Amino acid sequence: MPTIPSAFSHDMVLESPLGRLGIACRDQRLVRLDYLTGRVALNPASTAFEREIAAQLAQFFETPSQRFTLALDMRGTDFQRRVWQALTRIPAGQTLTYGELAAQLGSGARAVGNACRNNPVSIVVPCHRVVSASGIGGYSGKTDGREIDRKQWLLKHEGNAPGALKTPTKTPSNGMYTNKQRILHA
Image (cartoon, rainbow, N blue to C red; front, side):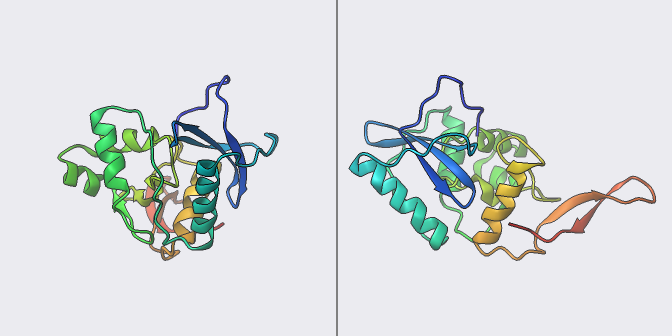
């Protein structure tokens, strides 16, 4: 998810298991979903469409197999929109590697990763379901920290087996990276 411009405003701010979510809409379409700090004040839904967004997000956090049916306004290149559409076809509890998705689209893994990084409505368009062939990959353009914790939480929430994803770790003996299984944590 791109960095939030300082002048960007959200139509509503909701609390979630992943922290506060800022939601922006335009013409009855979801435009952005941003992770916010706890310092941002909550702002409840004020329109029927916003209430529907809140209800579908709440349902997802209760039942991760729930599919979103929200109208979206996702601005991006033709290729980004193709990737984002493909993401919506990956069922909850399943993952694809960047390379597998790239092969489906006739593209390269880096291009898919860049499109995932620029996904303006993560969770709703599940870029977290795309992982690296050698580990969890990135989330929101980051490969560690809070973003990866969120990706791990989302994958675990959707029922991915905790040991199924591999995270590169350094071995103390030679400093080389190996794929050592790591338990996902919330």
